[in-house]
Amino acid sequence: MSLYCFGNARTPEQLADMRELDAAGICLFCPDGLRRHARQQILFATGHWTVTPNEFPYPGTALHLLLVPREHAADLLDLSAAAQADFWHVLGQVRERHGLGHYGLGVRNGDCRYTGATIRHVHAHVLVGDPAAGNETPVRMRFSSRPGREA
Ligand SMILES: [Zn+2]
Image (cartoon, rainbow, N blue to C red):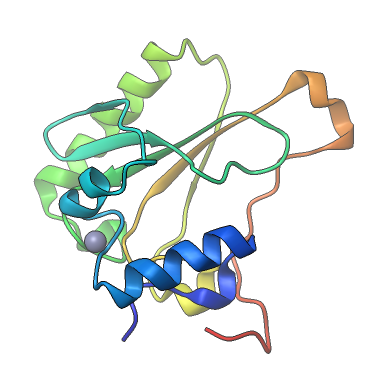
């Protein structure tokens, strides 16, 4: 099984990245992958989680962060109890460090062929809309597959 769900890539650049990483057997979100992939900037880390900006932010976002657990699992509920508990700690750190008064939180769990995710390593999206974009660009997150597209 591939580490990635190619059918859910949003841009040709992202798809090319995913194919390259998959061919090399690198999970971008496992600790070695995060370190080796130079463009993936690490903002801070807790005992079990790393926080990084989304390399491909959603349209209309002023802030789009990814919270990535060190453990390789496809579902938040398959993480160790310690990593699950630390999730609330890292989320609190994100809110505090970025002074967030509002934000969206999105997580796709399980088989990425059906959730719209691009990678089989669970991660949480913290999304803040850009007020300057107004209602013209509402922030949207997809939670389903694209029927007929390559998984
Ligand atoms: Zn992984």
